[in-house]
Image (cartoon, rainbow, N blue to C red; front, side):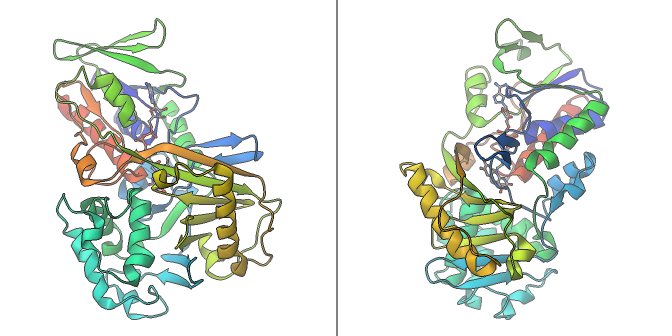
Amino acid sequence: MSGHIHIVGGGLAGLSAAVELAGAGERVSVHEAGPACGGRARSYVDRHLGCRIDNGNHLLLSGNRAVNRYLGLIGAQQTLTGPTRPVFPFMDLGDGARWTLDLSRGKLPLWVLSRRRRVPGMRLGELRSLLRLMEADPDAVVSDCLQPGALSSRLLEPFAISVLNTMPDVGSAALLGAVVRESLAQGGRHCLPRFPREGLSESFVDPALAHLSVMKAQVHTGSRISAVEVGDGRVTMLRGTGQDVIAIGPDDAVIMAVPAPVASSLLADRVPGFNAPDAFEAIVNAHFALPYAPVATGGLAQARFIGLVGGISEWVFIKDHILSVTVSAANRYATYDPDALARHIWNEVRAALDPALTVPLPVQMPPMRIVREKRATFAATPAQDRMRPGTRTMLPNLMLAGDWTETGLPATIEGAIRSGAAAARAIRERHGA
Ligand SMILES: Cc1cc2nc3c(=O)[nH]c(=O)nc-3n(C[C@H](O)[C@H](O)[C@H](O)COP(=O)(O)OP(=O)(O)OC[C@H]3O[C@@H](n4cnc5c(N)ncnc54)[C@H](O)[C@@H]3O)c2cc1C
């Protein structure tokens, strides 16, 4: 057993590390600056809409193995939901075409042979794009690997924008290739769309906190770490705000699981060789509160979401009476007036959903909330990917975690949870466990 392990940051990376370490019998304290844990994957009550929403829609896949392990450890596997088949309904806002990508469950991609199940207008030769992505070198961008055609414009480019949160002409092909390798290439069984039945916090945060409490781990919210003291080649002290100090003894360790800009401000001039991504992309989520829960039909009823191409909106999720829309790689819309953006999105939502609802949506935009996360993720370009640090630092008692560390994946929940587990492993290895 190690000494006391202090985890700075109670997002999913920090919680993942805490769950792994507490489960191994280690003494753990989590220090979270905010009033609640969850970080960028959290739910909260929105007073204007009068209900609880997630800060952003989060889509996961059944093959996210670290997510599955984490949910298993905290007893929350049943809190995710989604269609029972790997189906992805889509609409092209440009020409009104609708289709449902219906993947085969096994590894053999039989779906590409059926015109009903594949992307309309795609040629089989375009599938070479997937191989090129999986074999891409670290300097390649997504556009280098895509063959022109319907598969690219109607699936791979939108997929790249959502997964990388970065435009295909600058986004890392290798990072997208890693996701293709772990999802599409493994077959539809690994691609079932998954999202929280209730909310992000109810799936990923509340069960983790309940589990940590049983394991006697301490979680301090409202506890911001403002400085890290280093001496004799190790972390010796964490300073809170005000007079609070936490002494770090020779056997103690620290996992820094804060976002990249915070880690840079705390560590850049303290830790030799420290590096971190420094360019970011926004995500915009628009939440519309209807006075009733819309009733969907057909593929939309099964999936509860639809992918859109050819407009600004990318994914529309139906959750009871809330319609939530995701717009990724949203730096390009930074100068848009939020009300005008919301009206534009509402018109796209009506065009996409009306034909699949029993009652059309109101023409008048309902009460809405636009959430613009300016630094939603690091910009997943080859140059930024090279700046991601590993788990271990030059200080033996300091580990790093977070979706921006070198996970081999873009900034996702899967990457964040993996990074926390990797930091926990590194600390246990340091103590010979
Ligand atoms: C709008 C949006 C949509 C997304 N959609 C998806 C999706 O569909 N699928 C997917 O897989 N991923 C998605 N992501 C990415 C996913 O949310 C993140 O990858 C993941 O939540 C990152 O977790 P983390 O623990 O690394 O970082 P964070 O969640 O940022 O956690 C860091 C924590 O550190 C705390 N902190 C900061 N400074 C201090 C300090 N000085 N002292 C103590 N604590 C501090 C913060 O308050 C925060 O709680 C989305 C992200 C956003 C913003």
